Image 1 (spheres, rainbow, N blue to C red):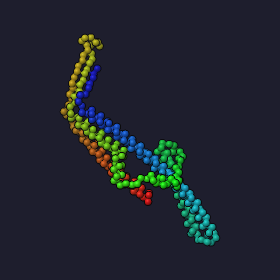
Image 2: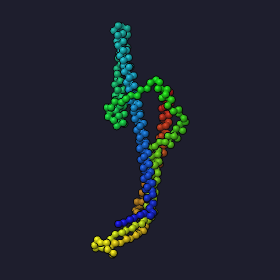
Image 3: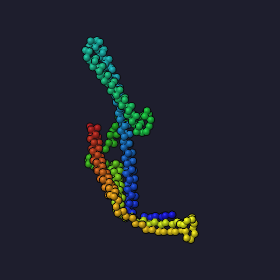
Image 4: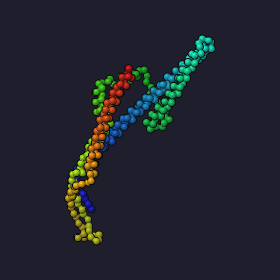
Length: 267
């Protein structure tokens, strides 16, 4: 029976902190994915609503184009207009029919994509939200008035889970460096061994033994593997820090694009 207890090992604390930061990175990654999924579902649903509205508009336009085609054909039979107006009206009707076919295909794909994101049967019918004229002022009031872009950028940088995930990853990589550095430090442990010895399995006065040991271990040379591991950990930290800086810039650009889209939509 052996009982061993580390007394000093620089790897233990660094490894525990590395695991804790890795857990935080996974937790923030899950939160970021959950937010992206909710956003994607809303955007896909809005696209489906827009395609449904387009179908209604084009269906009404097609009725108008057919009537225009009929009127021009009647006028041509009675010698009131030339043949080119009849051909133009027919071309306009055919163009609207083509657009209607395209929009109906878009509506089908949009509905299936919403169901795909919701993990539902692709052919499931969706319920269209209705907005009355009285709802428009109330919904418009919910649109936040745009403060300074720099303020929104700072808010986004402070809240986005993607950055928290990368920051936790950077912290975990820093602990990986400490784990690699621990290879150059000694390790101290206490070992307690108890058992029985002899040619036969017995528990007489001469058979049992107990031995306590204090073990010091230090690696003098490992063929450069420890230094390579340290360089690898430092390179990983630099990579994650660069990725974090890039993600922050991308988030700032997203905020600016969203502000521009909001201004265009309001105009």
